[in-house]
Figure 1: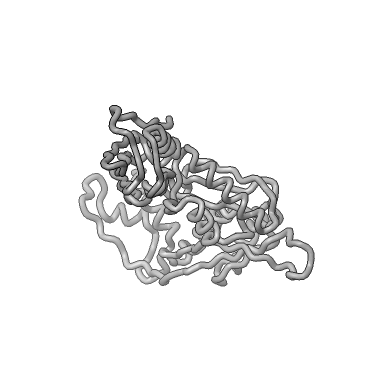
Figure 2 (figure 1 turned 90 degrees about the vertical axis):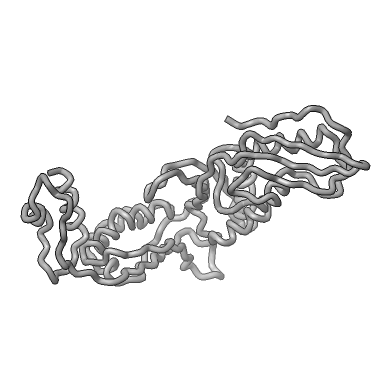
Length: 303
């Protein structure tokens, strides 16, 4: 539910603004709250315009329980907006191959100077973000609709605010891995049809990496494998017709190769260490198969 601003008791007439302050937020600075209210220094404002600014803050989304107070002296006014933080979620850009995340973020910051990579669950801020992203696409010759959806983060806890393009999809022509293990593994190659020929979606690529590629590295002892953000690349000649497909490039950092060195048990009373060791069928010195280790922990919990 969008909070509305609370009206203070009637005070003296407002005048020229000499200071705008914000307080109560742990996510946004006083300057950012001041910028979000829409009022400017040196403007002549009335009480009604101050109330309207507080209402704008309340409808924006990141703030709840918006209150304000002001003092006027010699026709000069000092404003303070007191807010509480509302729930926000990290922003994710799903299928914007024409623009990098830095370009998208910079464009959003120009429209919303207080944008810091998160977005509210609801509010007018989302409308401004959607319109801004559509304008950034149009500047690249891509005329499409941008939608947003609050979804659960499949790789962690909490939610993400996902923005995606509707009506201008591009298919994936191929997937290139920076590390040879992923490209040479038969099971990964057999499952690439889940992506190749389908509409480009970075979210779908990330799910593929987590479900299909990560287990391969864990099985080979690369327990700290790291997948950085997949990149979309156009391979069509720049002088030809506009591209209709993208190549997905996946940077992979395998990390160190781990070997099994045994396990020590503490606090076990129901089962002896010799029994627990049987749930982890690994020999000292062999590659630390992350899938076997995970299965062993699950077996221990089940027992």
